[in-house]
Length: 271
Image (cartoon, rainbow, N blue to C red; front, side, top):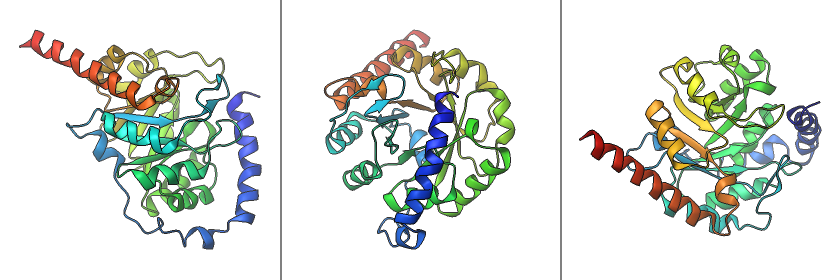
């Protein structure tokens, strides 16, 4: 059993418990439930933004603690001031040290798209995402059957949420539906946790033209982001690289500044 399978097994139990504690009728009373969402896809395509989805991440199964005592308020505001296009907030507790309240806290202090980074296997989690202030959700193709994926994507859209589909291989593209707004190519191998940006570069031409294209995992070099952008990617999900710093917002700001510097050099060379 690989780590994703372990997470999904635990998530099934967790969802059952949460349904009993927080029924859908209660979630629908949240002040965020009817609030208009902020479009992740539109923000990723804005020319005045970096395309970076900056992630709040306390720990990971493979690396252990990353920044366990980080402040959601300070980090999320720092990311936005740095020029990030959107926020991603991990809400899984068991494996990533997050919680739903982290996303709501980020929502309280920021007007920007917020992605709920979670292992979604049940429609209940989509209602939950809406109730805590999320604008978009991640649906991982690897852990969902084709029909299950389609149903979850359709339900998410019905709730007003945007859908970021995560794939690890080209074979998973057969699960794409019209309800998918963006596709994220995860550069991490789920078996051995190795990372290769070649995964994104190899799959970019296979992605549907109409979706926003996002590269995920292992993005710790501004030069790589520039290369991926020129290849056709519009979004770049980065969390661990920033969160390992004492001041993630400052690390994000410096990262974006270096991207802009590289782009300027390339533009001047072409001119």
